Image (cartoon, rainbow over all chains, first blue to last red; front, side):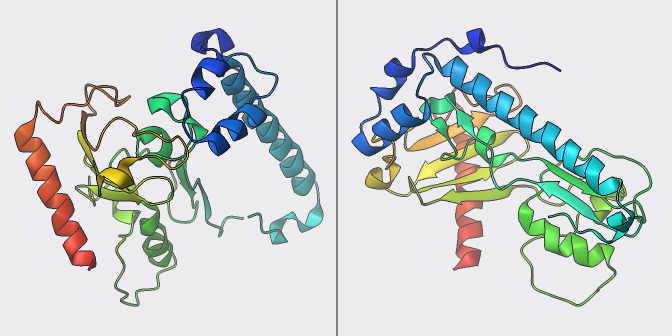
Length: 76
Length: 176
């Protein structure tokens, strides 16, 4: 599987965040990007989250498929 | 399972720095409005096909009714996607209409090759989250050459801009 290379988007978070004029949104962005120095790091985290959830959905699907009542399951 | 229909889609994409929109889904750019759509229905469609023409979420209910063979006549904005999937038609919408009102007041029309976006007012153009205007109050993108919507060509293709604006206004007047 190809993951996003964080070096492909090497912009400093602080350079991005300080351009935001609404202080509430600025602080929100600082909070959710905490610990990441670059935008690439945040995108890599996003990418990793999707891969993680995707894998866990696979685990869940395998579990349901192993059960006899699988044909009566509604997944939403 | 053979008699089931499974639809996978998403309510929006995400802008991960594109167009100066950071880790959110405001803006009418393709990164946000273009979403996955997979319809799995083995009892009706036996092989996999990929449809590249324009479709919208409003098409899903008519599609499901069509698949379920319920032919009540409802006045939907959307259209069944079944003819597209079966290859009986190449296109059901010559354009799609999109609008946002949460962070900024903008409307857009997206055709196969062009997208036209305009702000309803100068104040409405200012993004409530970011505190600035994303890319301007009137935008045109030539998607075939510029799929990332980087170059605003509103001043270059004047006739296209006017045509899209008229189509957009015409569509909105139908909604009123």
